[in-house]
Image (cartoon, helix red, strand yellow):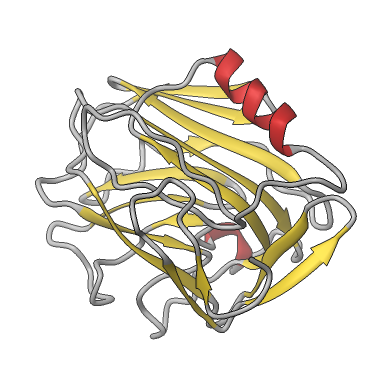
Length: 231
């Protein structure tokens, strides 16, 4: 990868991502990655997440480099996850799951108590982030170190959600597009251990050698373990 308007799925599940208004970049740390402009950039891997229950575990990981100081726009920007449904409309009741530069938002019908506040991303630096859901427990890992936990009090509705990278399926009055660089997005339908996460960090924190694909995803099928990476 590194050129073109789609991202390959290295998991073999065929979920190639469609790139809109994001461009390819390169540096000595991550080699190929995607640059998101904070206004219209998004990658849509045509991936549907399962209904979030107390039984389906997951791990979401990403290398990310914010290019904008935390403010009213960047603090709510979607690094990955969703803010609206696939058509860009609010779910009824209102619900979404997304990673932002300041928190992991687990939002159900106005309940913000399950949001997991995390260390704010500092502009200009690459960091590895992992979110692990194990039953009702959420845990946040920053550069391979656990920095926050929360026990969920509400599950997310009764419908499946889309999964977007760098933005949302809505270009209206609410701007929650991410301004920065994103690389090596991975989705697992299991709760990885600290050792697993540190192994991912060590294996992908390479210069100048990197994974073959910048963006890769896998189908979110409950009960089936898989890995995905982006390039």
